[in-house]
Amino acid sequence: MENRQSKYQEWVENLVKTKANQEKEEFRQVIAAGNTRQDLTRPTLESLLQQGYTTVQWDSQGSREPKCMELQNMQWTLADFLTGLMHDAPMFEKSHPGCLCKIVVTGPGMQNTVIDTFGNVETI
Image (cartoon, rainbow, N blue to C red; front, side, top):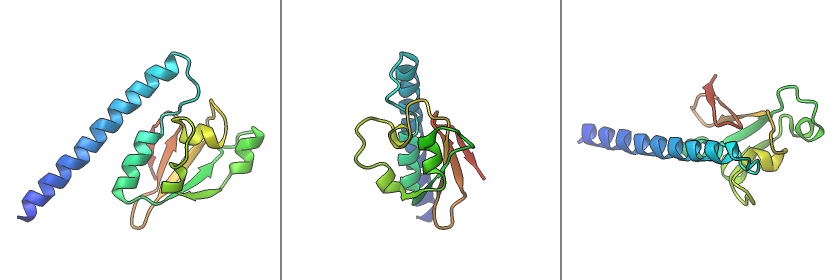
C-alpha cells in the first residue's frame, strides 16, 4: 500500500512539474512577442507552494534600480506573494518589468530555492 501511495505522489508531482513547464514555455513565447507585463515565476512558485514552501525573500542582486533596492530582503508568505496580481507577474508587479532580481523561497525542512524572473530555479 505504501508503495502505491509513493507512486501516486510521484505521478502527481510529475504532473504538476509538466504543467508548470508547459506554462513557462507559453509565457516565454508571450514575452518574446513583446508582452513585458508577465514574468515566468508563477508556475514555479505555485508548484513550490504545493510542495510546502512558505516564505519568499527578495534579493535585488545589487541592482541600482530604486524600487529593487527598496525591496532588498523584504519577506512575504508565498501565498501572499501570489495573491491579488493584476498581471501574470509575481516579481514584476513588486518591482518593474524587466527586473533582473531574484527571490529566495524557503519552507520548513526545505532547501532554499532561488528563482529569477525567467523561472529558472537553483537550490542552495
